[in-house]
Image (cartoon, rainbow, N blue to C red; front, side):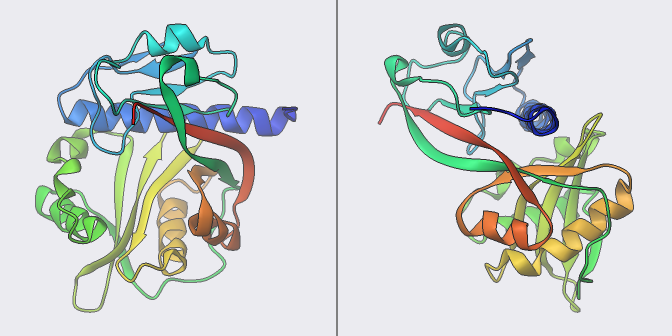
Amino acid sequence: MKWTTVKHLLVRAAARNNAEWCAAVSRSHGLTSEFGQHAWTAPARTPLYYPDAVTLLPDTDPAALTGRIDTAATGASVKDSFACLDLTGAGFHVLFEAQWIHRPAGAPAIASDLVWDVADAPDTLRAWALAWDRGEGNAGLFRPELLADPGTFMLAGRSADGRVVAGAVASRSDEVVGVSNVFAVDGDPDSAWPGVLGGVHHLFPTLPVVGYEHGDDLASAVRHGFEPIGPLRIWLHGG
């Protein structure tokens, strides 16, 4: 794949930002991880939905990468940030493909009809997590230890009666702010994006916004000013 210089640098910044968020989640669960030149890796299995490795450069060596994570049991995953690895020989298959996205710094074009704030205490984080989870039983993924991470901001959109009905995670790194876990309890991300972008602009008015999405969620992000800038793949080990 040919990369333009600007898009290549944006993808690298987005991949690094995402790896730092994965590292923060892992730390909140008491897990250690490591940043190398080519990849971030965790030697022990990471929390649900989070990869065991994120590549930071396209020329990552597949054997070296998989040798730094736990593949003894099925379920390990790798975020191939440049969609250029072949991990089939190590027992992986492609779980899904997505696109890195980028939006220049700036306020959203549409105002949100919700009241937005940052969930910055254990009880408000719990309310955020329960709304994000929508009854699936995984709200414990987001632990209070995340509140101590200086680069993590849990954005919560509240209805008139004070309930959290939309939200996202904003994770700041040196060059960009990453947005992930965008949700709305009505299932429509279009109702969440204006408030999420408004919150990000309020917190980090000069930083471009990055993330990754696929399917309908990608289409929604594009409607709110994002541009796809490059593919990524999620590889899953085992069945």
